[in-house]
Image (cartoon, rainbow, N blue to C red; front, top):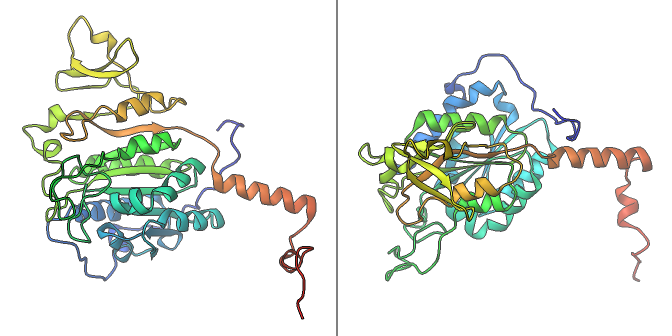
Length: 347
């Protein structure tokens, strides 16, 4: 690693064997039958043993929503916390306990509505967190209201004449907040989901993974174009670092004005297809990729790792700053601080 970055405090690894069973609790999993959360839970439980990190050194923090039941089903430490505040709580934990592997599980409503402010600041600070954002484009727990990612015109219980709100693009939001790792995957694609989780786990800093997750009760089929064999090959853009961005017989090209567009690949333009660079320091290319998909139809949706760069990690910077202050001024005295020059006694 370059000397530009402080030494990172890594979670200690333990080679004692663990299996997916070790990460399953005895709690009954209570999601609606057919919910995409089941597939994500199974993928995470199967994937965790690969990290070589003990259950006792792993923490899952959630907010409020269907996805936020997740900590109950992971046989690790966990907290079902406050609506939208999971990134804030996880930030305090990760900053004070660098020996822990800290994961946040949240939904599109929890993360992007009441929790939007906490999310963007965790991203810009680059706290050592892994944030799994389950996006089903609806409020499921409260029975089907439109969410910050619902498409314009969405008819729900709270928008009977159709939503007027323009939806958030979670990846564009994350890249705009200078997130160092940004990716997207799908609940039903176990292989792709696991590969993205691996990449996120390797990353030092905040990793945001948007997972398209089907709510079969209140928003069934929201991502059908990306899942059906008849349409998925022409709808999904599978990103691979260092590889030309092509899918079916199409590719991604840059227009003279800098915009990215999708067009058929021919012998004449094959050498103009953009090569994906997830490690580019400038967020411009990743942001442009995040804007390709149409918010209403999801046609031409990039999945995979859009951005994966290194930047100093907040936890390490804070620890180094505290160490410097202690070496220069000695250990702090809380009593002296509380009873400083700006306090007085009455009576």
